[in-house]
Length: 105
Length: 236
Image (cartoon, rainbow over all chains, first blue to last red; front, side):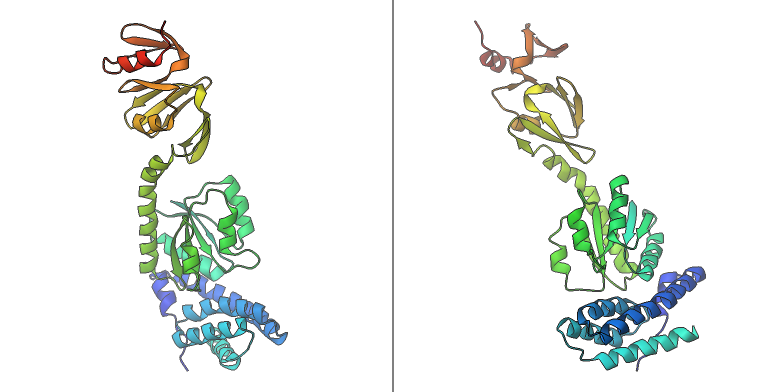
Protein backbone atom coordinates (compact mmCIF):
# COMPACT_ATOMS: atom_id res chain seq x y z
CA UNK A 1 0.00 0.00 0.00
CA UNK A 2 1.48 3.36 -1.01
CA UNK A 3 2.05 5.91 1.73
CA UNK A 4 0.82 9.49 1.74
CA UNK A 5 3.53 12.13 1.43
CA UNK A 6 3.97 15.89 1.46
CA UNK A 7 5.93 16.24 -1.81
CA UNK A 8 3.22 18.22 -3.58
CA UNK A 9 2.54 20.45 -0.58
CA UNK A 10 6.25 21.16 -0.23
CA UNK A 11 6.60 21.95 -3.93
CA UNK A 12 3.70 24.39 -3.59
CA UNK A 13 5.09 26.03 -0.48
CA UNK A 14 8.48 26.89 -2.00
CA UNK A 15 9.87 26.86 1.53
CA UNK A 16 7.04 28.93 2.96
CA UNK A 17 6.48 27.12 6.28
CA UNK A 18 3.42 29.18 7.18
CA UNK A 19 1.69 28.23 3.93
CA UNK A 20 2.64 24.56 4.39
CA UNK A 21 1.18 24.48 7.89
CA UNK A 22 -1.94 26.37 6.84
CA UNK A 23 -2.59 23.91 4.02
CA UNK A 24 -2.07 20.92 6.31
CA UNK A 25 -4.43 22.46 8.87
CA UNK A 26 -7.11 22.98 6.23
CA UNK A 27 -6.75 19.40 4.98
CA UNK A 28 -6.96 18.18 8.57
CA UNK A 29 -10.20 20.13 8.96
CA UNK A 30 -11.81 19.40 5.59
CA UNK A 31 -10.88 15.76 5.14
CA UNK A 32 -12.75 14.38 8.20
CA UNK A 33 -15.80 16.47 7.31
CA UNK A 34 -15.84 15.19 3.73
CA UNK A 35 -15.31 11.65 5.00
CA UNK A 36 -18.32 11.89 7.34
CA UNK A 37 -20.57 13.08 4.52
CA UNK A 38 -19.31 10.28 2.27
CA UNK A 39 -20.03 7.58 4.87
CA UNK A 40 -23.47 9.05 5.50
CA UNK A 41 -24.35 8.92 1.82
CA UNK A 42 -22.86 5.50 1.13
CA UNK A 43 -24.69 4.07 4.15
CA UNK A 44 -27.97 5.45 2.79
CA UNK A 45 -27.15 4.07 -0.69
CA UNK A 46 -27.16 7.60 -2.07
CA UNK A 47 -24.63 6.67 -4.75
CA UNK A 48 -24.94 9.86 -6.76
CA UNK A 49 -24.20 12.04 -3.74
CA UNK A 50 -21.49 9.63 -2.60
CA UNK A 51 -19.88 9.95 -6.06
CA UNK A 52 -19.71 13.73 -5.54
CA UNK A 53 -18.10 13.16 -2.14
CA UNK A 54 -15.53 10.83 -3.69
CA UNK A 55 -14.88 13.42 -6.37
CA UNK A 56 -13.98 15.97 -3.73
CA UNK A 57 -11.94 13.50 -1.68
CA UNK A 58 -9.96 12.67 -4.84
CA UNK A 59 -8.29 16.06 -4.66
CA UNK A 60 -7.00 15.39 -1.16
CA UNK A 61 -5.79 11.96 -2.28
CA UNK A 62 -3.80 13.54 -5.12
CA UNK A 63 -2.43 16.34 -2.93
CA UNK A 64 -1.04 13.67 -0.62
CA UNK A 65 0.80 12.03 -3.50
CA UNK A 66 -1.28 8.85 -3.63
CA UNK A 67 -1.13 8.12 -7.34
CA UNK A 68 -2.52 4.56 -7.41
CA UNK A 69 -5.11 5.43 -4.80
CA UNK A 70 -6.22 8.34 -6.96
CA UNK A 71 -6.79 6.01 -9.90
CA UNK A 72 -8.79 3.70 -7.67
CA UNK A 73 -10.87 6.64 -6.44
CA UNK A 74 -11.59 7.63 -10.05
CA UNK A 75 -12.76 4.08 -10.74
CA UNK A 76 -14.90 4.04 -7.60
CA UNK A 77 -16.47 7.39 -8.47
CA UNK A 78 -17.45 6.02 -11.88
CA UNK A 79 -18.85 2.88 -10.27
CA UNK A 80 -21.02 4.96 -7.99
CA UNK A 81 -22.25 7.04 -10.91
CA UNK A 82 -23.13 3.77 -12.63
CA UNK A 83 -25.09 2.74 -9.55
CA UNK A 84 -22.78 0.15 -8.00
CA UNK A 85 -20.41 0.23 -5.07
CA UNK A 86 -17.63 -1.97 -6.45
CA UNK A 87 -14.19 -0.96 -5.01
CA UNK A 88 -15.88 0.48 -1.92
CA UNK A 89 -13.70 -1.51 0.45
CA UNK A 90 -10.48 -0.47 -1.29
CA UNK A 91 -11.56 3.16 -1.36
CA UNK A 92 -12.39 3.17 2.33
CA UNK A 93 -9.00 1.63 3.03
CA UNK A 94 -7.46 4.68 1.30
CA UNK A 95 -9.51 6.95 3.55
CA UNK A 96 -8.19 5.11 6.59
CA UNK A 97 -4.65 5.33 5.24
CA UNK A 98 -4.99 9.13 4.96
CA UNK A 99 -6.66 9.40 8.37
CA UNK A 100 -3.71 7.59 9.95
CA UNK A 101 -1.24 9.84 8.15
CA UNK A 102 -3.00 13.06 9.16
CA UNK A 103 -3.09 11.96 12.80
CA UNK A 104 0.68 11.90 13.03
CA UNK A 105 1.28 15.15 11.15
CA UNK B 1 -4.77 41.18 -13.64
CA UNK B 2 -7.48 41.23 -11.03
CA UNK B 3 -8.82 37.77 -10.35
CA UNK B 4 -11.18 35.85 -8.11
CA UNK B 5 -11.22 32.21 -7.03
CA UNK B 6 -14.42 30.14 -6.90
CA UNK B 7 -14.15 26.69 -5.34
CA UNK B 8 -16.18 25.00 -2.63
CA UNK B 9 -13.01 23.38 -1.27
CA UNK B 10 -10.90 25.54 1.05
CA UNK B 11 -7.85 23.41 0.23
CA UNK B 12 -8.19 24.19 -3.47
CA UNK B 13 -8.71 27.90 -2.84
CA UNK B 14 -5.57 28.11 -0.72
CA UNK B 15 -3.49 26.27 -3.34
CA UNK B 16 -4.67 28.57 -6.14
CA UNK B 17 -4.03 31.62 -3.99
CA UNK B 18 -0.51 30.33 -3.34
CA UNK B 19 0.05 29.68 -7.05
CA UNK B 20 -1.05 33.25 -7.76
CA UNK B 21 1.66 34.60 -5.44
CA UNK B 22 4.20 33.17 -7.87
CA UNK B 23 2.87 35.26 -10.74
CA UNK B 24 3.38 38.98 -10.06
CA UNK B 25 0.78 40.16 -12.56
CA UNK B 26 -2.00 38.40 -10.65
CA UNK B 27 -3.92 40.18 -7.94
CA UNK B 28 -6.42 38.02 -6.06
CA UNK B 29 -9.34 40.28 -5.13
CA UNK B 30 -11.55 37.71 -3.44
CA UNK B 31 -12.39 34.05 -3.09
CA UNK B 32 -15.76 32.34 -2.87
CA UNK B 33 -16.93 28.93 -1.73
CA UNK B 34 -20.02 29.08 -3.91
CA UNK B 35 -21.02 30.53 -7.24
CA UNK B 36 -23.94 32.61 -6.00
CA UNK B 37 -21.73 34.76 -3.78
CA UNK B 38 -19.39 35.28 -6.71
CA UNK B 39 -22.24 36.39 -8.98
CA UNK B 40 -23.23 39.04 -6.43
CA UNK B 41 -19.61 40.21 -6.30
CA UNK B 42 -19.32 40.36 -10.09
CA UNK B 43 -22.43 42.53 -10.30
CA UNK B 44 -20.52 45.23 -8.45
CA UNK B 45 -16.88 44.58 -9.32
CA UNK B 46 -14.91 44.12 -12.49
CA UNK B 47 -12.41 41.29 -12.71
CA UNK B 48 -10.09 40.12 -15.48
CA UNK B 49 -9.85 36.46 -14.62
CA UNK B 50 -11.79 33.81 -12.71
CA UNK B 51 -10.38 30.55 -11.39
CA UNK B 52 -13.48 28.42 -11.47
CA UNK B 53 -14.15 24.95 -10.11
CA UNK B 54 -16.56 22.88 -12.19
CA UNK B 55 -17.92 20.58 -9.50
CA UNK B 56 -19.71 22.62 -6.92
CA UNK B 57 -22.91 21.76 -5.08
CA UNK B 58 -26.16 23.12 -6.59
CA UNK B 59 -24.49 25.38 -9.14
CA UNK B 60 -21.73 24.02 -11.37
CA UNK B 61 -18.96 26.04 -12.98
CA UNK B 62 -20.73 25.76 -16.33
CA UNK B 63 -24.00 27.00 -14.79
CA UNK B 64 -22.00 29.92 -13.46
CA UNK B 65 -20.50 30.84 -16.86
CA UNK B 66 -23.94 30.52 -18.46
CA UNK B 67 -25.38 32.92 -15.89
CA UNK B 68 -22.99 35.84 -15.94
CA UNK B 69 -23.19 38.51 -18.61
CA UNK B 70 -19.94 39.32 -20.44
CA UNK B 71 -17.84 36.82 -18.49
CA UNK B 72 -14.18 37.68 -18.08
CA UNK B 73 -11.47 35.14 -18.91
CA UNK B 74 -11.98 31.87 -17.04
CA UNK B 75 -9.52 29.18 -16.04
CA UNK B 76 -11.35 26.02 -15.06
CA UNK B 77 -9.94 24.06 -12.16
CA UNK B 78 -11.17 20.53 -11.73
CA UNK B 79 -10.37 16.97 -10.72
CA UNK B 80 -12.32 15.80 -13.72
CA UNK B 81 -10.71 15.41 -17.13
CA UNK B 82 -13.86 14.49 -18.98
CA UNK B 83 -15.41 17.97 -19.14
CA UNK B 84 -12.64 19.43 -21.32
CA UNK B 85 -14.59 19.20 -24.56
CA UNK B 86 -17.59 20.94 -23.02
CA UNK B 87 -15.27 23.63 -21.62
CA UNK B 88 -13.88 24.61 -24.98
CA UNK B 89 -17.35 25.38 -26.25
CA UNK B 90 -17.08 28.61 -24.26
CA UNK B 91 -15.10 31.54 -25.66
CA UNK B 92 -14.32 32.90 -22.22
CA UNK B 93 -12.73 29.64 -20.99
CA UNK B 94 -9.04 29.89 -21.75
CA UNK B 95 -7.68 26.72 -20.18
CA UNK B 96 -8.55 23.68 -18.14
CA UNK B 97 -6.39 22.91 -15.12
CA UNK B 98 -6.59 19.43 -13.65
CA UNK B 99 -6.01 19.21 -9.90
CA UNK B 100 -3.55 18.93 -8.31
CA UNK B 101 -2.27 21.93 -10.26
CA UNK B 102 1.50 22.30 -10.61
CA UNK B 103 3.21 25.68 -10.78
CA UNK B 104 4.52 24.93 -14.26
CA UNK B 105 1.07 24.11 -15.62
CA UNK B 106 -0.41 27.09 -13.81
CA UNK B 107 2.14 29.45 -15.38
CA UNK B 108 1.37 28.05 -18.81
CA UNK B 109 -2.33 28.74 -18.31
CA UNK B 110 -1.61 32.32 -17.22
CA UNK B 111 0.56 32.81 -20.32
CA UNK B 112 -2.43 31.75 -22.41
CA UNK B 113 -4.67 34.24 -20.62
CA UNK B 114 -2.16 37.03 -21.20
CA UNK B 115 -1.86 36.11 -24.88
CA UNK B 116 -5.66 36.12 -25.22
CA UNK B 117 -5.96 39.46 -23.48
CA UNK B 118 -3.31 40.99 -25.73
CA UNK B 119 -5.11 39.81 -28.84
CA UNK B 120 -8.48 40.95 -27.49
CA UNK B 121 -8.21 44.63 -28.60
CA UNK B 122 -7.57 43.53 -32.19
CA UNK B 123 -10.53 41.16 -32.06
CA UNK B 124 -12.67 43.84 -30.49
CA UNK B 125 -11.57 46.29 -33.19
CA UNK B 126 -12.71 43.99 -35.93
CA UNK B 127 -15.92 43.19 -34.09
CA UNK B 128 -16.83 46.50 -32.58
CA UNK B 129 -18.55 47.94 -35.60
CA UNK B 130 -19.99 44.65 -36.76
CA UNK B 131 -23.20 44.74 -34.84
CA UNK B 132 -25.54 46.85 -36.92
CA UNK B 133 -29.27 46.45 -37.01
CA UNK B 134 -31.54 48.63 -39.16
CA UNK B 135 -30.98 52.22 -38.12
CA UNK B 136 -28.67 51.29 -35.27
CA UNK B 137 -24.93 50.93 -35.01
CA UNK B 138 -23.41 49.30 -31.96
CA UNK B 139 -20.05 50.67 -30.95
CA UNK B 140 -17.72 49.08 -28.45
CA UNK B 141 -16.60 51.47 -25.73
CA UNK B 142 -14.93 50.14 -22.59
CA UNK B 143 -16.29 46.65 -23.24
CA UNK B 144 -19.87 47.96 -23.52
CA UNK B 145 -21.77 47.84 -26.79
CA UNK B 146 -23.48 51.19 -27.06
CA UNK B 147 -26.32 51.68 -29.51
CA UNK B 148 -26.09 54.73 -31.75
CA UNK B 149 -28.96 55.86 -33.94
CA UNK B 150 -27.41 56.08 -37.43
CA UNK B 151 -29.51 58.98 -38.82
CA UNK B 152 -28.51 61.07 -35.79
CA UNK B 153 -24.83 60.85 -36.77
CA UNK B 154 -23.81 63.99 -38.64
CA UNK B 155 -20.05 63.67 -38.73
CA UNK B 156 -17.35 61.01 -38.42
CA UNK B 157 -13.80 62.21 -38.12
CA UNK B 158 -10.61 60.12 -38.23
CA UNK B 159 -8.05 60.93 -35.54
CA UNK B 160 -5.07 58.59 -35.63
CA UNK B 161 -6.12 55.13 -34.52
CA UNK B 162 -9.52 56.46 -33.40
CA UNK B 163 -12.64 57.90 -34.94
CA UNK B 164 -14.86 60.58 -33.42
CA UNK B 165 -18.54 60.00 -34.04
CA UNK B 166 -20.65 63.13 -33.60
CA UNK B 167 -24.39 62.78 -33.19
CA UNK B 168 -27.24 65.18 -32.45
CA UNK B 169 -26.85 64.78 -28.72
CA UNK B 170 -23.60 62.95 -27.97
CA UNK B 171 -20.09 62.38 -29.25
CA UNK B 172 -18.18 59.09 -29.10
CA UNK B 173 -14.55 58.13 -29.57
CA UNK B 174 -14.00 54.60 -30.84
CA UNK B 175 -10.83 52.67 -31.61
CA UNK B 176 -11.51 52.00 -35.30
CA UNK B 177 -10.96 53.33 -38.80
CA UNK B 178 -12.95 55.57 -41.11
CA UNK B 179 -12.93 52.83 -43.74
CA UNK B 180 -14.49 50.37 -41.32
CA UNK B 181 -17.35 52.65 -40.28
CA UNK B 182 -17.88 53.80 -43.87
CA UNK B 183 -18.74 50.19 -44.73
CA UNK B 184 -21.36 50.17 -41.99
CA UNK B 185 -23.10 53.44 -42.82
CA UNK B 186 -25.88 53.62 -45.45
CA UNK B 187 -24.54 55.16 -48.68
CA UNK B 188 -27.77 57.08 -49.30
CA UNK B 189 -27.14 59.11 -46.13
CA UNK B 190 -23.40 59.38 -45.80
CA UNK B 191 -20.62 60.54 -48.05
CA UNK B 192 -16.90 60.78 -47.63
CA UNK B 193 -15.75 64.33 -48.36
CA UNK B 194 -12.16 64.09 -47.20
CA UNK B 195 -9.74 61.35 -46.23
CA UNK B 196 -10.52 62.22 -42.60
CA UNK B 197 -14.24 63.00 -42.76
CA UNK B 198 -17.56 61.33 -43.51
CA UNK B 199 -20.68 63.47 -43.27
CA UNK B 200 -24.42 62.94 -43.20
CA UNK B 201 -25.79 64.60 -46.35
CA UNK B 202 -29.09 65.47 -44.66
CA UNK B 203 -27.29 67.55 -42.05
CA UNK B 204 -25.44 69.85 -44.47
CA UNK B 205 -26.26 73.54 -43.95
CA UNK B 206 -24.21 74.97 -46.78
CA UNK B 207 -21.36 74.17 -49.13
CA UNK B 208 -18.65 76.57 -50.14
CA UNK B 209 -15.85 75.92 -52.61
CA UNK B 210 -13.69 73.74 -50.43
CA UNK B 211 -15.73 73.30 -47.28
CA UNK B 212 -19.05 72.19 -45.87
CA UNK B 213 -20.88 73.67 -42.92
CA UNK B 214 -22.50 70.86 -40.98
CA UNK B 215 -24.04 71.80 -37.66
CA UNK B 216 -21.42 74.17 -36.29
CA UNK B 217 -18.48 72.38 -37.86
CA UNK B 218 -16.74 73.61 -40.99
CA UNK B 219 -15.33 70.55 -42.71
CA UNK B 220 -12.86 70.62 -45.59
CA UNK B 221 -13.84 68.97 -48.87
CA UNK B 222 -10.98 67.45 -50.81
CA UNK B 223 -10.72 68.07 -54.51
CA UNK B 224 -11.00 64.37 -55.29
CA UNK B 225 -14.15 63.90 -53.16
CA UNK B 226 -15.96 67.04 -54.28
CA UNK B 227 -17.50 65.56 -57.50
CA UNK B 228 -19.07 62.73 -55.47
CA UNK B 229 -20.50 65.20 -52.98
CA UNK B 230 -21.98 67.36 -55.73
CA UNK B 231 -23.47 64.28 -57.35
CA UNK B 232 -25.17 63.25 -54.12
CA UNK B 233 -26.88 66.53 -53.21
CA UNK B 234 -30.16 67.63 -54.75
CA UNK B 235 -28.83 70.52 -56.79
CA UNK B 236 -31.15 72.97 -58.51
